[in-house]
Length: 253
Image 1 (cartoon, rainbow, N blue to C red):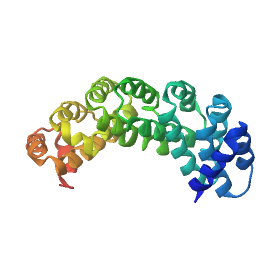
Image 2: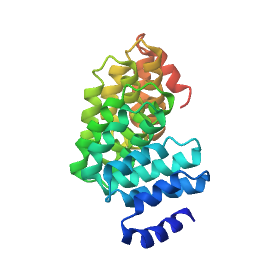
Image 3: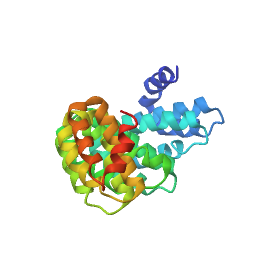
């Protein structure tokens, strides 16, 4: 219903070049549905005034109502996907936003923009994600490795894996957690043997936060590729430095 209303508004208002004005008016309304509609209009208003539109959309992804935040986050993904050349650099500032909702929306947008599988987007998207790998906010961290990076691994497996190898050299436990959690995604099953190269290294990290993420990746991978993962875990059971990781992973296999 909201999208139908948005289409009608776009048809009637865009001729006057006043989509941003209408979106701004709707964003001030107390009804959540009005602010949801404003979020969708931002996708179409971007061409009129890119910076002003993104400022408004950033407000909407930080709305007090979760339903508005969800619609606005989806709209952010559609906007970045359809206006990638111009919007990517502008939206990069969202990574430094004080609100975790804005940073989360940025990652939702990256995952959406990855789905088109345009090769020229792969490296820019991976670079856009990099500064958020160390973000420790619970909402944001769930959206990095397990979501945005996982989407990039699905659609651009070769280059994404190269970045994961590079990121695995960090000493930041949050970065390493995100690297490990990227391999919990279904896409990792396609490169299970390569994933083990990284996970073997991370399994030696003595910090529980990191090695528990490795265990999670191993049991998720093990369900998809037991032929690759079970023999590896059997070896880890005999390794005093990895035995805790192996036991934790095997609990769920």
